[in-house]
Image (cartoon, rainbow, N blue to C red; front, side, top):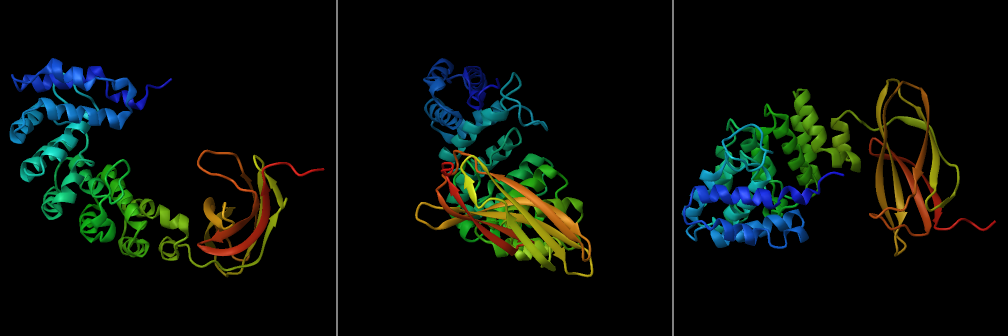
Length: 378
């Protein structure tokens, strides 16, 4: 059985951190630090363990932030390309950096320039994507200027911090309301990273754009169209990943950008094989389409289940089905079996549901069916 994720912070890791802090500060109380940091550790999950370590650092490091920061800086492992190793004899790296970055975020706001030095050094050994957000919230202009100065840094982890740290809706992290409202400062940075030589960085750029698309779909659709001009395979891959939510939603502009124009079809037929579906059973349906065009068409075929809600309205959920190339005047038949299994992330309600077929973002057919939790009486 794999080791629980929370055990990335354990007594061994905490003891190693304390040894490095003590090595660079004679006054540091290693025993007190370790005892406080491991107190009830087994009852805590990963983030709570990290937060507890940060709080204990606040108690045992010097109250003078500049002195405390110098201890942290000196305790770091030599910079390498592997940011996943943990605290070792050579210094601290990997997940152990997480509580250290939070310490900088909580105590270094009045020491902006030095904090940027610390976070840049820490991200080279793990990541500062969570910690940099304290500064983007408190001093956005100064922090954006620092990030802009790192755009050509030799270390890929530093360049990735620029895109990952500015994600408006980064999971596990504080949201950035100003960038949710106006992402233009972030986009200016992403423009300069879109052709980064490292896929590690480019994928972060894509994830940032996907975040932005949740609030500004038309803006990201425009960016995708512009970036696709003259795009090589790396940038094309980035844009496709950035637009994954918009593609799933059937955004017409994005679909057109990727060559999925309005479909030319005729004689379409959607057949539901049973209009009564039982919970834990399957909805089975068949789609028939025929090309009405004189040239082959690239088609992205999705289906949408309109689930019944408690209040009687329906809520759509898009499911990816198939990408095909349909030759001129050819006919295609496709069959699908969609399970209605009980899952923890959805509550099913008895009643009228619908299945809808969307091709290149355009609805071409819709049929109703009944869902019930019990088999019908014979």
